Image 1 (cartoon, chains in turn orange, blue):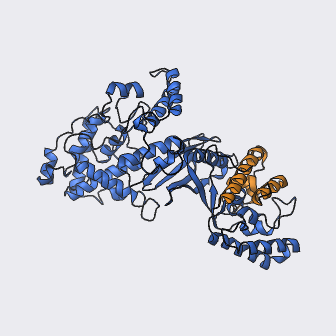
Image 2: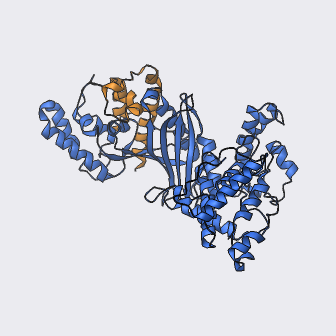
Image 3: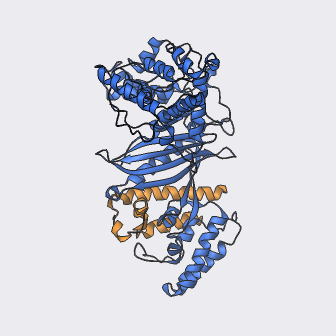
Length: 66
Length: 499
């Protein structure tokens, strides 16, 4: 892994951590909507997200625009 | 009291022996008749070692049959580790010459259970040394150097109780041990809280030595037990001092294998020192287990994690843990592995996490994995690895900063993306299909090309603004349910990253 790619992934991970910390308290938890997903509980914050802001910032990071 | 004995599969001699023990037990008023309870892996290893020594020396039928208590079967990631523990214990027992204590790394409770599992009747409250001696006496064929030429049955009669264990800590007095650990009934077996202390190596003043985690564990114990000596305030100071301690003097010289690259702090070297650089001794393996338990046992988002099994081998530490609710009911399982790669970097493998539905949605996974990542950050782990192959994880791991570990694993996802836009073309508009084709082209680039897409970019391929949980786009469809190996770098403690 190149240093540049590593730096992007670290930044994406940090952005995600901060985003989860904000979203977790109010994130909807609806396992009934995905009865076949064994790992729904690990990822429900991501899966049920409608957050364009995270997407915009994350894409800027991985494209090296930040 | 012992349970019912089935005569269907035992010899007459063994049946007589068991009945005789039961009768003797009934006639004794001070007999320890507490149930044996569950046997942990270490006790099972000890019993297996003793049973095999019995068998090798021709002693017939014991109450405990190792074949009924298998651990880590063939095919398990730790298959073979259990065997190495057994072999080392056999060696320690066989080489026992009446001095020292081959059971020194077992606590009283483990030896009590082992003795009872072998059908030995114990007095209530019988001490650890006495139990150890009776275990050795019961071991008919234990081929110590002198006993090797004596027929097994005769050897059993001739066996004498072991002398009390010598000090395990050269240069450190029992008085000093008791100052540090409180009034321990057994200087290096268990403390008053029943926690294993084990054999302590190194200089007490050296923060690299094994003294430090013992001091921390004991200080925590005293915090929970304010009546214990010394005072709560002293315990707090000891705990704070132990974390703040820095190397001093020649005792803090770098350890083998830890000298590459820049100078690392104590914390950064922690996992590097924990993961063995060679096949560990039983003592070291037990020590690793204790340290892992200390680092990871605890509460996470209202649920309790308890490490149940730790296996260590050259360049690898593997652990399994159970998750309990506030009623003590087991509600989940965890499996993790830490390893040292050929280039010396440390890797954490997040292998398995299962949580019962009734306790999901409370933030456990986030709290637990967050704790681990903080620990990795402080301990020198370079990367976290997942098998993103379970249902929604194939899509969600990419959002968290996990990337494709190799070109091959990315190629599998590229194939799914292509399949999606060819087999389900009506599901997407022309812009989404064009975006997917462009992404597939980028995934044909060499893996180290800077334009090769990250897993996150692939997961978002064709997403339109505002699309979310109930919407579908090519990247999400391709990665939901996909199977790929993910890698996420871990920043070194305090290192700046792109923001």
